[in-house]
Image 1 (cartoon, rainbow, N blue to C red):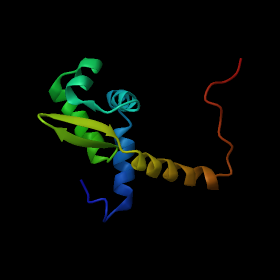
Image 2: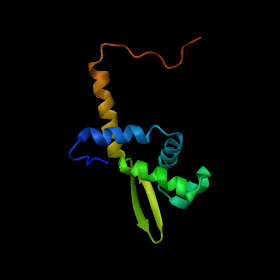
Image 3: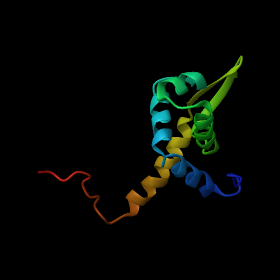
Image 4: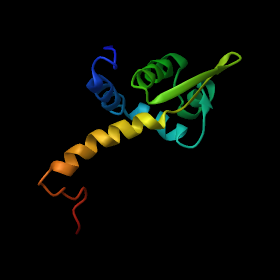
Length: 108
């Protein structure tokens, strides 16, 4: 992965890539409420440790997660400042766009 300090957009790209997977979105949703260890995430999601580790690594590389070790367990939580970076990136498009956003679900 490119060093984010050298290429500011690399972290934005990594963030949106991390958000593109349904399992990673489920991980983030669980962590929205509280910090959890790998074992708790695996139990709640019903996935193997190896599969979960792959997805946690992707989220960490995008700096969307923080981790801390306590004994033999690693606990994960959201890194909210990085979500703000992604929000600000998108807000720039909205701010300068002359196009009115379409409704997501058409009304009947």
